[in-house]
Length: 129
Image 1 (cartoon, helix red, strand yellow):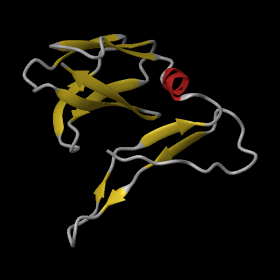
Image 2: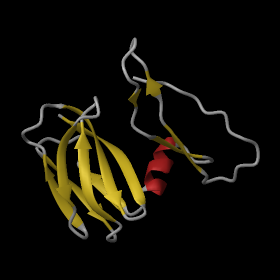
Image 3: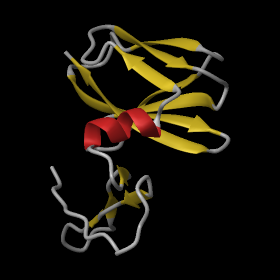
């Protein structure tokens, strides 16, 4: 787990997106980069997630064997599911509005789903029970 705080520059308007990544070094091994964390000024975290991905719904979360990805448009065309270590455990093309993702073969735990699109990527956390 990584805990961090952000010191904002003066004058940033509400709604400014800030992205963060951390590099972790273990002895003399190459750097391990964390997933990108997204923050939006002037919005609490729970609101930020809704605003950042206003055209995305992922449910149920937590989930058991599968979850749905609902999008209002074709902004995102594929998804990649990674485990807590950043290993890719699933890749899948997205349907235009609704996609079912089957994770019944994965062990329980926390995963990150990256929605890949023409105008950028969005990352969300998924918990498998």
